[in-house]
Length: 244
Length: 244
DNA sequence: CGGTTGTTTGACCTAGTTCAAAGCAAGTGG
DNA sequence: CCACTTGCTTTGAACTAGGTCAAACAACCG
Picture 1 (cartoon, rainbow over the protein chains, first blue to last red):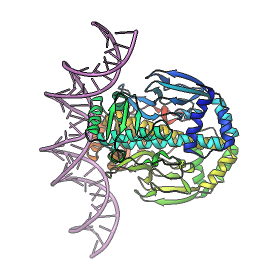
Picture 2: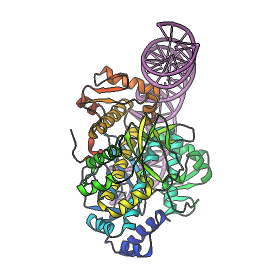
Picture 3: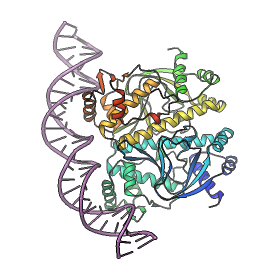
Picture 4: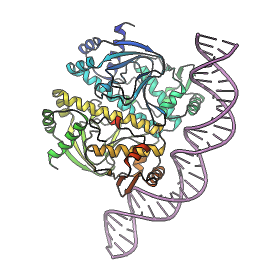
């Protein structure tokens, strides 16, 4: 709610991925962040836009999405609290994808010119931001692999592992119970699967005792089993202190 | 062959994507580049490595690849002359993917510490390098979409468009005839398809008069038709001067 | 209570896989 | 200059993972 709390989210995230110092934290806190709330399925940025803001996810789930000529949607990555999905807009003026809320979300906007001058004057922060975009790229690579070469069941397990792991690493969930109010249709768009098949794969994961769901709660009952089923290895997320 | 020529490749590429100046070019030329030749299917860097060099592709085709637990391979992106596939290694110490030659290739190695000090002292070059990694990320996004939501025929056409377009934009091909000595198995690994189906989709493209092949030569007979068939839009490649 | 959005089910279908064998081109050594 | 590998492409036939369609069900909400 207060300007401080949105900076906290940003700082906390950057600390999980890079080695920033006290002085840098002060600078980060001085970046003005304009907060706004959105419903699910709201386009924050569209393909072809030339935005002058980048945004940090403060709460909720955001996806980068693309649409094919036949009107099908692909979600190419998820973004959770602390992530700056369109940081690349700082150096790529024209957007090549959309960013949409997948759940109700709170977003914090930061002006490009502010971010640029912070980067110019604070090389360690610039490096942290660069690193953040590189981790995004690593996630895209993993998603190409997930969608291209894993079968539906494994693919589903993998994406759940990633979501749960990332939410936990920014302190958004305790244990292995996550609140992920995302529709099965959106999961399908992320996995390159039909809604019907997403539903069946979720049932299979429940049947095998790997997860339990109630409403939007997803409970990883057997984390080891789930990571195994999902062929999930955390290397590509490049956490500084891999939690577990 | 001479040290100058490998710098040329690098400089030329950076000029196609960013606005670097005369002074920067001099600096870039001063970066020592150690050249080496490889056969096809050679792993230049492996998952888990902590390399102290990044490399620029001087000739040939390189792919970033990942392997699933079931031993299937996914190529997550191609890299052509001028590209620096593992530039992200500068800020992500541990590799989350392999880089392998897909054709015979000439590679130029540059020390990380050299690159880091160049970045520290020349912010415009740092920005150009950052931008280069952001374009890589944009390509990964497109590939997620290609593999996740396009059918095999469209997918095949799309990847050919990307390859031909990128090769042309760095001056590697004239008109629409490209030399791409890549196997159909590798194409399958890039598209998430079986070799058999790759073969059939290529036949279909030939049958419809969009391409002709002889040996490793791919001739785009009908560029407009091919881009249409491949649902190909160049935005995601973020060229400074979109050629056509 | 009716409307809306999301999940679940069942039946049928097809795009793409798998397997196995047959061509084909290029290089090697005798 | 010819037999022999070796690696890649092409073909055919059978199969299956996952898609499509359509309807039922459940939950939420004003």
